[in-house]
Image 1 (cartoon, rainbow, N blue to C red):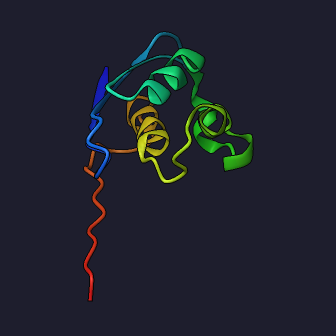
Image 2 (image 1 turned 30 degrees about the vertical axis):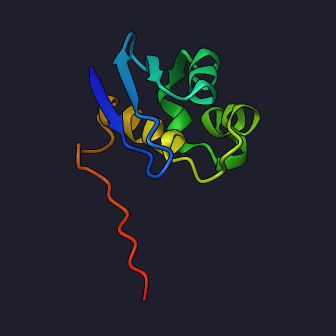
Length: 104
């Protein structure tokens, strides 16, 4: 099981994503969030297939459902869901992701 904790930035609505392998290529997904839009996304994507990490953005179930649930297009949660799935599927090693902003 892999757990990703997401601090999304200025909104401050923390999210926890849990991905657990349930079959050869099947995974269960649980999203707990202070954001009701992200919670709604979690209701829509409770199971995933390993091949979902290879689907293009417009065909990907996380981004497709995210486009219906999330009003903030730069929300980092969909990306974090897919990174967690990659790690649980053994397709990537766990390494924190970071975006640093610098105003000049």
